Length: 149
Image 1 (cartoon, rainbow, N blue to C red):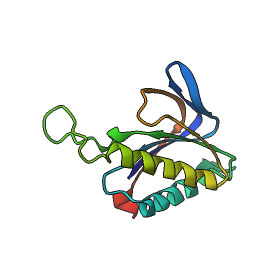
Image 2: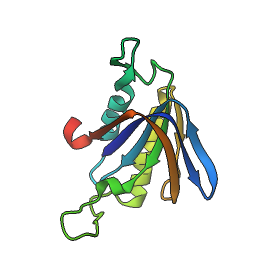
Image 3: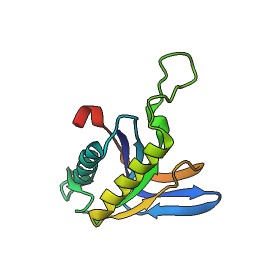
Image 4: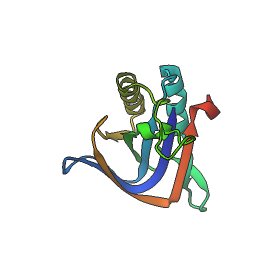
């Protein structure tokens, strides 16, 4: 499982010309699910995501969490995080989870994040989405379950 986390001032996702998710200060998270991912892996990834202290405190140190700043989450499914570009110029996506399994994991992650009490907005699994954001910093973090689980 891979999360690309961007600290944002605001972010939104649009499908068919309609904004379906919008947040202010918080994280915009691209979520990639592999064929080997489980709910146990998702639990560890969500715990790490929600605990990240990457907002600045009064001294300018990245010492505050999403909860500390009253931030929100915009969660976007992104199977292309498992693109394999080793051979040729056209990426292979064979390591990405099958759509049914990946969608179930995405919904599981959404549910776990909502249980935390943090405001959660989402994209639409499998849709052609347009994502806009103002990256704060810029500050971007990659969480890979192969490295933290």
